[in-house]
Length: 191
Image 1 (cartoon, helix red, strand yellow):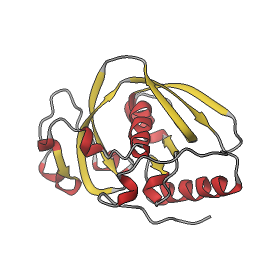
Image 2 (image 1 turned 90 degrees about the horizontal axis):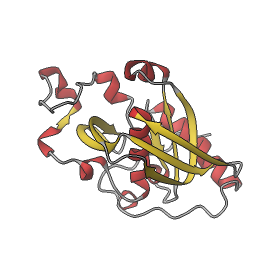
Image 3 (image 1 turned 120 degrees about the vertical axis):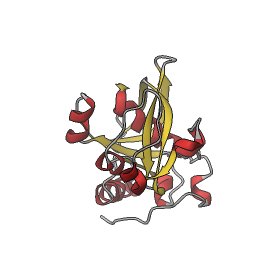
C-alpha cells in the first residue's frame, strides 16, 4: 500500500469527467482502492475519489466515522468502495451544509445537497452495492461522486460569501441561514 499525492484545485485531472472502470475486480483496481483508503485515512478525510489521486477513473471510497455519525445523529458507515457509481435523488429537498475538500486545502464552504439519495456501484469483487443514504452519508457520497464528473464543491455553492479559510473559523463563521456551525474537527473530517 502507498500514500498517494493529492491533486489540488486547478489540476486538469480534477476538471474532466473520469473514465468508467471496465473490470472492477482487476488487480490494478484493487491496488488503487487499497492505496486510496490508506491515503484517505492518512489525510483524515471522510472520502476520496480516484481523480483526487491523479487517476481519472470512476472510483470513490468513503466512510462516516463513528464520532461524526454521533454528532449528526446517524449511524456510522464503514469504509465503502464504489466503482462506477450512480446516484439518484429520492427527494427534491436539499439542505445547506459546510464542506471541505482534500483537493481544496484550507477552505470550507456552504454547499446545497440532496437530503436523501439512492446510490449504486460495484465493489472490487465485482459485487453490486445499492443503498439509500441521508444526512452526512448522502452529502459525502454526492461530494465524492462530483469529483468523477469534474466538479469541486465551490462550483456547487450558491453564495460565495460563505467560502472561507477554515483557520479563520476562530473569528466566527459567516451566517448561513439554517446551517449548523461546524467545529474545526468536523471540517477536517470532510473530503
